[in-house]
Image (cartoon, rainbow, N blue to C red; front, top):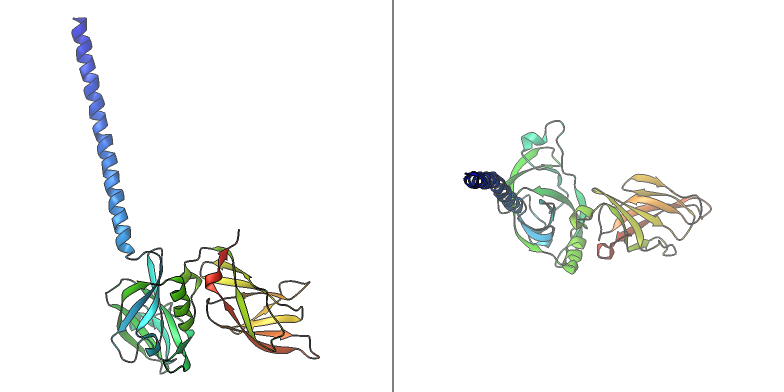
Amino acid sequence: MKRSTVLVLTMMSISAMMTAAIPAFAEETELETVAAETEIQAEEAAPLEDGVYSAEFDTDSSMFHVNEANEGRGVLTVKDGKMTIHVSLASKGILNLFPGLAEDAQKEGAQLLEPTEDTVTYSDGMSEEVNGFDIPVPALDEEFDVALIGKKGKWYDHKVSVSDPQKLETEELTSETQESGGITAFGLGLEDGVYTADVTLTGGTGKSTVESPAQVTVSGDEVTAAVIWSSPNYDYMIVDGEKYEMVNTEGNSVFEIPVAAFDTELPVIADTVAMSTPHEIEYTLNFDSSSLEKAE
């Protein structure tokens, strides 16, 4: 009688254990399925791996198109699943773009896309300054809305699309970005932090130099560089109309200035007090993206 009781209790215990294990197993399987589905969705949200590509940029208008020097293509940057394409346009006639409809572009608080000043070089060797734009790309091979405003002050709706992305290697990337007005920290996929980058200086009398490599700090989309001159006689610099004072009190002049893009000329003005009267001298700086190294 006791042996039968023990046997029954044992069978009941085993049954209970198996019953408890089934929901746990089912729960783990469900979690694995959800994780797999999430991974697939993430892959669908980011059709390209992070990096920089050359891509076709098509529009519905002969008045709004990529400059002929770039053969219909722009520089597509993919970072964290988000895509942005930089295109150099035919001229400086288009003043702003808006990723959406013209009606929304005119609403209070609308975030307009500001132009960059790009240098394009044609097949005959001639160069020209044109407006370029960084345009968000919601999807590849699908039309999306982009509105524009020109010098006449009227907004127009257009349809554009981006296709045929081709991954750019380091050498190709440098060449492409030099032609299209440089590449931003976002375009390079730089994480926040402190870097060093080779910098070249041109202009002036050729007697002054700047220290290279220079320290470059990345914070979000903002990049600043510490420019150390070979002379203590510079008392301020002007970049894009903004005046920047020295950040040191001893030794050669040091300035912290914004760097909008790498691999392109950055016009600056530096004021020297070495002469009998102060003089503002025009220079250009060029920060080489291929030399970027993360500081330890």
